[in-house]
Structure formats: C-alpha cells, structure tokens
Amino acid sequence: AQKITQTQPGMFVQEKEAVTLDCTYDTSDPSYGLFWYKQPSSGEMIFLIYQGSYDQQNATEGRYSLNFQKARKSANLVISASQLGDSAMYFCAMREGVNTGTASKLTFGTGTRLQVTL
Amino acid sequence: NAGVTQTPKFQVLKTGQSMTLQCAQDMNHNSMYWYRQDPGMGLRLIYYSASEGTTDKGEVPNGYNVSRLNKREFSLRLESAAPSQTSVYFCASSPPRASGKSYEQYFGPGTRLTVT
Image (cartoon, rainbow over all chains, first blue to last red; front, side, top):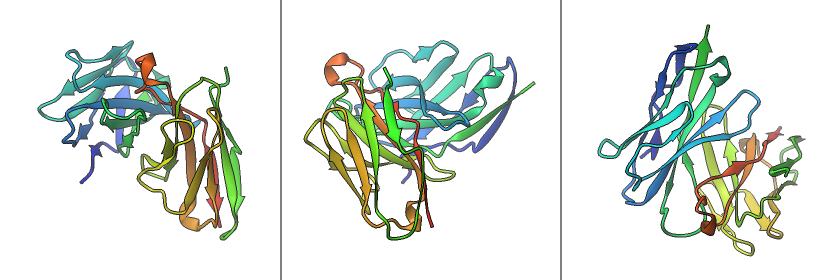
C-alpha cells in the first residue's frame, strides 16, 4: 500500500490566490513526521515545512501552512497569496519512528505540479 | 558553508560500466542519505548512514553499494550500471538528534545519470 498519496498530478492557481495541495498518508507508527518539499525546475529539493504527529498545533512557515488532520491521516499544504515563483513540483513526505533511531528516512509521494498564472 | 555538494552533476554510462557518485557535507551532520528520483515519481531511499561507520539499506538498494568514508563524505557506487538505473540521484544529510532538528534533511543539487 502507498504510504504517501498525492492525488493531484497538477494544479493551477492564480497569482495572489490561496491553494491547497493534498496529501494523505498511511502508518501504524504513533510517532511520525510529515514534510513538504518544493522542487523547482532547476531540480533542487527545498524544505518547506514539518509537522510532528504529536504537535498540537498546525505548522506554519510564512505563507506555508500544513493542515494536519490526524484522524483522516491527511497533511495538506496550504500556500497563501501565491506568487509566480511558487510554480514547481511539491512533494509530501513522511518519516516514521521519529522517537527511535537517529536517521530521518523519508518516504515521498509522487508529487503535485503547481502552476501559478497571472 | 557549501551545504551538501555532489559530483558529478551529469554522467552518461554504458551498460556494465561502473562509477562512484560523490557526496560531501560541511554542516557536521551525523546522518547522510542517497535517494533516486525517476520521472513522475518521488524520491526513493537507496541507502543511508545514521552515523559515521554505519550504513543500512533503504527501499531500493539492489545494484548499489555505499561507503561512509568519514563524517563528511558518503559515496554511492554502481558496480555494473544498467539502463534501469537511469535516474537523478540526490544526496542528503540531517543534523544530530541533540540539535532538536534531526527531522530536517538538506539535499544536494543532484546528479543526473543516464545509462545507455
């Protein structure tokens, strides 16, 4: 079974609008972390935001917020006030066993390509 | 601070050839990782090294070997390249647990490998 599912292969949003990128996950581990990464056309992976499974509040980083719904096993990324520079691939990822081990092994979804239009 | 560096940036190999992808980080991170990214897919973990002197298999280790040469460097070797190994390879590192940010991963720029 897929551990991370991103069902939107592509999304369009107008500049200055907000957009939500969906991510659902599957794990039986009570201690896990969820991540979003941005990959522009240049290819590098840019860390955006992190949410721990025990965090009480949804994570926010500037224009990025993570809508964490534990019971639904969803971790959607919300980008507010979209900019042309937000056009990129966005990947959701999960780390299991946060409280065990020292390595942060990530499992990635297949990504959503976001295109911001004028 | 260069962060995570990878060499080479591009490589073309013939089937059966061998090569080593190099990765180095200057952030004093304990853990390092190798991922591959195939078209239309997310990254998949090949091997990782939780700390200097240790290495472990990830999700897709077949056809690869790794060496954690020292704390800074983590190399990935293809002994006999196959067309199925055509991919973009990313190296990453993460801070020690004591930093409180061991969940973060810092990625290198990637190596685009084509095997013909």
